[in-house]
Image (cartoon, rainbow, N blue to C red; front, top):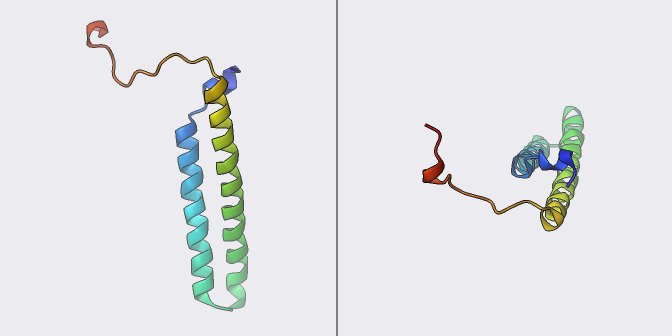
Length: 88
């Protein structure tokens, strides 16, 4: 596995992209709630762009994460440290 991919924290990246999607969804909802005012259109376009880019990023990151996990040569993941090998 390339060194760059071994340092990427996929769960954090996917969480950030999911939060940005929710923010974009909320911005589109607020724009629709504001009505047909002329000032609301740029915010609607911005919210739509954030939604589209974050969904594309989510799909791409999930695909890369699945591929890296499938072909990666990582050892077993330890959830907890071994109590016998603590640093003292």
